[in-house]
Length: 81
Image 1: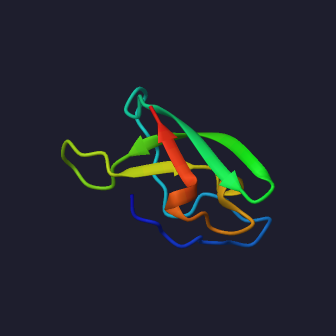
Image 2: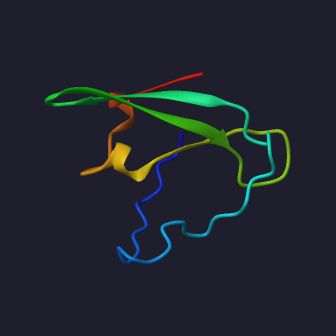
């Protein structure tokens, strides 16, 4: 999956940047995001999304705090449906 740079906003501003409102049941997949850090492992949730029309799912969306304080290299990231 491609990695996108972290986009930050002011702390007190709206935390959703460039988003859209999802229709109910339009994002049915729950991901288990397993991250490997130097100090151990961590787990987060996520969902598969698509940015363009069509039948493709090429992006995983998770919370920013799961990837911080630094971006995680793909060799240290496991996504499970």
